[in-house]
Amino acid sequence: MIFRQLYEPLSSTYTYLLGDEQTGQALLIDPVITGMERDLAEIHRLGLKLAYTIETHIHADHITAALELKRMVGSRIAAPAHDHLPCADVGVEEGKPLSIGGITLQPLHTPGHTDGHFAYLLNERIFTGDALMIDGCGRTDFQNGDADALYKSVREKLFVLPDETLVYPGHDYNKRFVSTIAQEKARNPRLGGDKTLEEFKHIMANLNLPYPKFIDYAVPGNRQCGVCPPDLPENLENYCRQITQSPQG
Ligand code: FE2
Image (cartoon, rainbow, N blue to C red; front, side, top):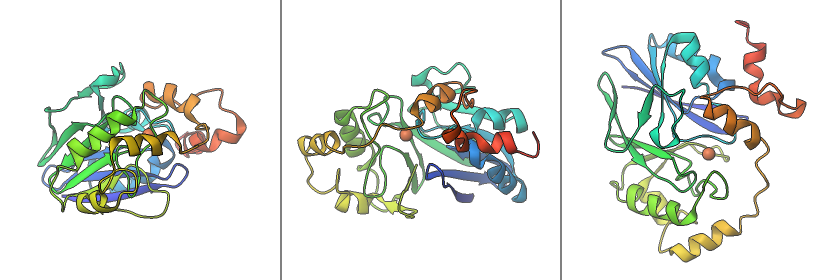
């Protein structure tokens, strides 16, 4: 299997490229519209064809590249069925594996950051989206976020995986790339060790995070599988710049 961890700096998002050498098919987990040209170039450089894009959840901090990639190369859009997106070709559900060639992802419903959030298990790797990050987790104060649900998701769906499972998060803001289930169980300051649900809820209720500056554009855009809003203020244009300045138009 071909594996690449690709980084989008504006939202500190990790996009994961998985490629099957036998069939030449590839999939992207959480592609970002501003990193799309780079991701496609990498896929083509590797001699692969993009078959699917797969979302962990409806993102609030960037626009997904799913729809643009579908238009450009015909990839199919997989997104959590829970969110009922009319633009999705495949509704992701737990117990319904997603396969391309010899690669099979097991979707795990992990609500809490959003109610429709999924993590994807691929053998010794787990792509955790914003449910579990390295020494952290996604916020729970928007998009039907729920600290109770996130605690349960992480403790009962992710921390039960084998210790050596590699944790690939949806974001990292400190240039870290990968962790393991054992490491997060041991030292995640919010969810690891003997942290109780009450302690976790207290931590999440007192993060004092600012209102997400792109959320009012990103969520409606991503409910359409990745549409850049036409009314984007000048200070947020970077979030869609690659499309408007792309040499392909
Ligand atoms: Fe998120």
